[in-house]
Length: 241
Image 1 (spheres, one colour):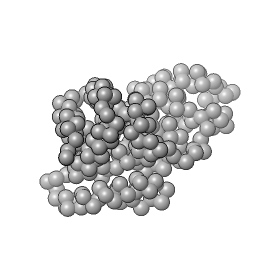
Image 2: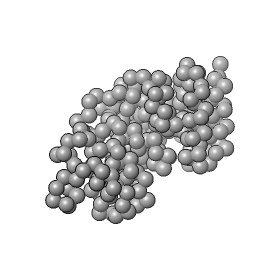
Image 3: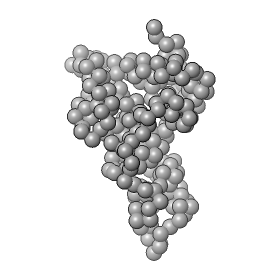
Image 4: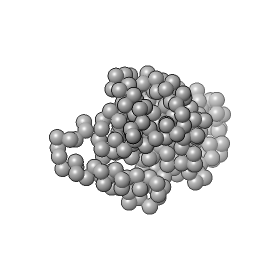
């Protein structure tokens, strides 16, 4: 039986255009939903999203972003699928902090302040900063561009917390190229990568399904989506724009 919440979220997803407002609305719904029902709802949304149901795609993406802002609930729903092998990046390792041209290593507070400045040269340096708090502020910088964020998400090795913060940013999570870069990075928590998979283009699904560095569950999800999507692949009228 289809979980009732699936249609509720699909209707809400189609009726609220502003992404940030939609995420806030979903947070209010998800926190009062029983855990088992929420898991079943996300599974069904992922299945429908893989079939290129655009309302389900928007609802799935919004629900997963909303969960990122409710970490206890996210952990209860996704469990160890949020875990990745230990990252090689230590956000407090001074050797990884980029040269900001001050002749010394800047403090975390100073770097966070620089992340807010709409200075193109500074942005290029801040993008290499290993601390998630610095990157989170950078993601709100009006001068930051989509190619910048794609490059950030493609960096290997990377810090899972940095990639999670990119995904929970409505401004960037709605960008297909950003989602693809997140899915392809083995440092992205598997639960996030799996949520992105039903939204990927077929060519990216094929690449990820064959990537030996990707989590096994993510590769399996790619194959599942491809198996359902195959009959629609040659029909140009079913393409999602």
